[in-house]
Image (tube, rainbow, N blue to C red; front, side, top):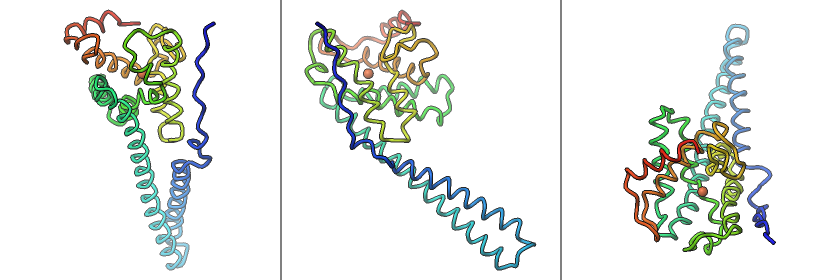
Length: 247
Ligand SMILES: [Fe+2]
């Protein structure tokens, strides 16, 4: 009888109740409201209040604005550190296999080039580029015996490998700033005709970033030498992509 592979247990330590990013976002909103209120009081009270009250409101406004800028800096710093930590995990994972070394970076580069050609502005590309770097992060939870197996996978092994998208989402879950990235990672194995996984989402219901990552992933796989075949020339890669168009 075929057994359904067990999902890895969720790590409770990775799900703190109060995430620093959420606390900083709340603090940022409070400070923005405080600075705006101080500014309005300062403007409206310039003639109605005594001068010392106007100066006091102005000082409060400047203080609020400075704290707001500092909170924004801390938020960005936290986001970069969190991204650095998960990127290090992804790069360390793929470094174990000489055939996939550099794959994540190349997929990110290809994703960026494709999105540039599609005319997507840099601000909108950021999530897709980060997701491209982290798309196979979940493979860290797949046994080496499956990841590096020489022969074809059994149906059970294939099901176990397919769980890497869910594992990737689990790893990214504690990073509040990565919700968009997590969504793109989850859908990077969907297919346009609905035959992909994990949800069998089809067509344009699949996020654009995930579709581009899937194409970049396929291009890099075909362009890389594997134990069982040499790297494919560009002409063959383009022929394969055209043949698979719409699937
Ligand atoms: Fe994958």
